Length: 403
Image (cartoon, rainbow, N blue to C red; front, side, top):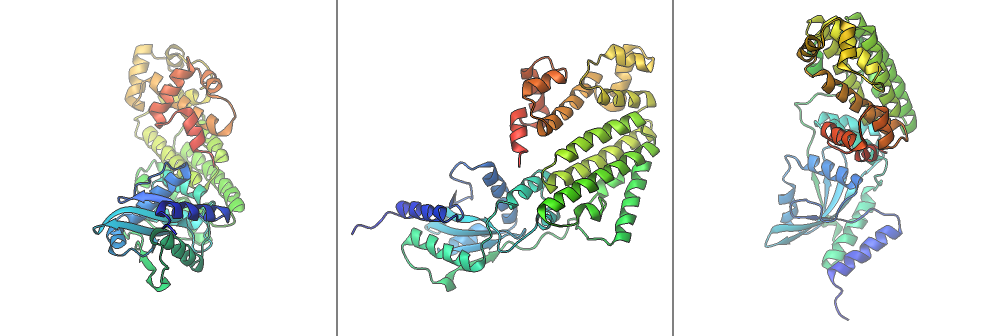
């Protein structure tokens, strides 16, 4: 009987895994680049894999033996990896993962990702991916290792030869999340609000998830957790906007910011998005108050900014805006740019695009409808402007943010 080619054995293994609802078989080259085109979830998994390999000589460990290796990354996810080498050089990796060895909440994963310095975008994507990861206990992982090893080498795996390798602990030079009791959480919240009222920019550098309040991050079942986090985020938004107005921000601007962030909080689908919004709103409020208190933005210009944000779906002209301040158009335009950092037209465009991002996530309006409602002259101009600001087309932005 002719020997079955390794490619056929691997395809048979893939079919067996798929037929029993098991994990997918992944293929990487010797530098850990995915060979097959991956889905958005696969790209998130690859980013997590790269994060876990940082500072770890996984390539060397894999190339030492041809037996499978269970790699446990610093964030607690696991990959089963089978190496293929040529003259001790790693040329191909077949793997299963990531998967979970035990039940884990999205809160726990996001906590660890924050501790290892993962960007907010990856934390949001990881929160979505976690709900889809298979739970594979060690005994089942051993079975998959034996199957994959046989498919590659047509030999039985001695399970005592199954290798285990850990990616190490989280770095020690990053901020930690501490679960606070009610008194501590209240104290942290009051300190944050005090700094917002004073426009204290040190809050931005020192912001961690403790400063956002323990109640926002308390773990629980998925549905309950998200609902609870949204309620806590809206409560925090209300406190921040009030503190900012007490610090000198005009009521018009404070209410406009509240409305914008409230829409985004309501539209959020995963905890990672809420955490990003919490940090963004806190930073924006403290920066706005600082600008007012240090007179980088006069009351007149600050009031115009608030007016713009409340009338984004209406025509806005430099002539009408300057008339509100009593300045000439020339003086108003120069003063506005000096204080806000943007020309009036650039500021209006930026805020309309921010509003468009919210509409893409919270409504079923198509790109043309959103472009028209926000006073863009054409859908193509809107798309080009949106891509410049967000790095994605409006359609890509909407699809990428879907759970």
